[in-house]
Amino acid sequence: LTEKLSRLVKEMRGQARITEGNVADMLREVRMALLEADVALPVVRDFVARVKEKALGQEVMGSLSPGQALVGIVNRELAATMGQGVSDINLAAQPPAVILMAGLQGAGKTTTTAKLAKLLIEKRKKKVLTVSGDVYRPAAIEQLKTVTKQAGAEWFPSTPEQKPADIARAALDYARKHYFDVLLVDTAGRLAIDEALMREIKDLHAILNPVETLFVVDAMQGQDAVNTAKAFSDALPLTGIVLTKTDGDSRGGAALSVRHITGAPIKFAGTSEKIDGLEVFDAERHAGRVLGMGDIVALVEQVTAGVDMAAAQKLAAKVKSGETFDLNDFLAQIQQMKQMGGLSSLMDKLPTQMAAKAGQMDMDKAERDIRRKEGIIHSMTPLERRKPDLIKATRKRRIAAGAGVQVQEVNRMLNEFGQMQDMMKKMKGGGMMKMLKRMGG
Ligand code: GDP
Ligand code: MG
Image (cartoon, rainbow, N blue to C red; front, side, top):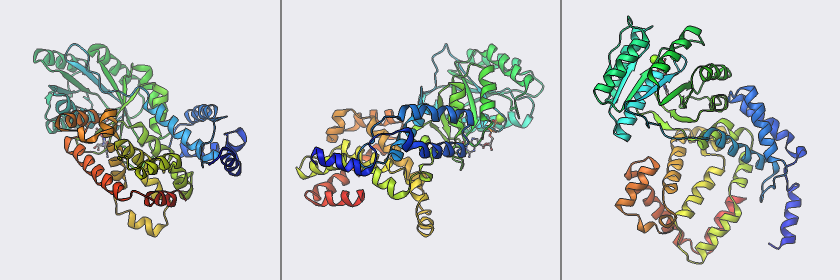
């Protein structure tokens, strides 16, 4: 397109910049979406104000409307806020590195303790001891014993007759004498913020001097996640958050609230009741869910906005000129799928009959799959992306470790890429561009 022509197109689209006037309605929608996702009101206010400030004056790219562009900004800001400072569990301490679990009753502390134990044993080859300071319910101590066995870690006995502080000292002593790398300390459930129990966990913190103090919070917790988070973060120097029950059907707005209030990074997400249901927190994926873009942008608009025509044309030109289709192009394709608002939000917009059929597919799994592929490619060097043939056993192992997946998964992705590459070779010529045009509307 000549410059004049492209300017004309922009004018026809209406506005080339985000202004107070053209996004006021959209901002209201975003605010509603966040509230519906159970993000606490003060956090929503703060967040929306920040987004607005960032968005005003920004140029609207390509075929997007200002509203669509704004959703993009909101989504990125959500991911950036929730993903801030994300890091692995810190074990940099004179062994045993102590990890203290804090949170309301039913948040998932005991379950997460065992999940973490398993993860530290398997991924980081640590010798792990668990102990329960929950002396108020005998069943709670038994529960930890059972799940610790499942995790393959050692459990340090405690009884309801003991004081939590004494249990902590004894477990720490035992862990030192027997050269444990990590001591995971599960604590008593609090139904609500309770002064005595808060004092107790503060005492435990002083005795144990933990390298990680993790606040465990249920993703389904609504507005009062803020109050809980504030109370715990006032009482304890939290080093991280574990967001549990992300497999539930809530939109998980608690993540944003809790991140905002505590300032601590969200380290893990609980994804099932099972012992291996713990994943490193993925802010981008969670952002899509909190925002529930499907509610805001209609399907057609999403698809139109999702396909970045400039990138698509570049890709088509590449195919045409016979250059090889490499992993960077593959990644661009994956990302375009994501830009369309995520598979499940597309599903939300389908007519019911079709959705019922599509419902038989596991969309969450499909999305997770896309994210993992992305993760794998991100773990590659630029050279590897350009020349995938270089990726042999050693590199595969490094890439797999970097992406936190099994080597088989890297193989599977490379196979899929190979198939795509073949297809691209066959499509050399006009076919590709036609297909993309159709997708772009
Ligand atoms: P605690 O009181 O904080 O120790 O909480 P528990 O660990 O006993 O967990 C309370 C309930 O939540 C149990 O039924 C767990 O199985 C369940 N739970 C914990 N984490 C998750 C999760 O990530 N997903 C699902 N679906 N359930 C979970
Ligand atoms: Mg418990």
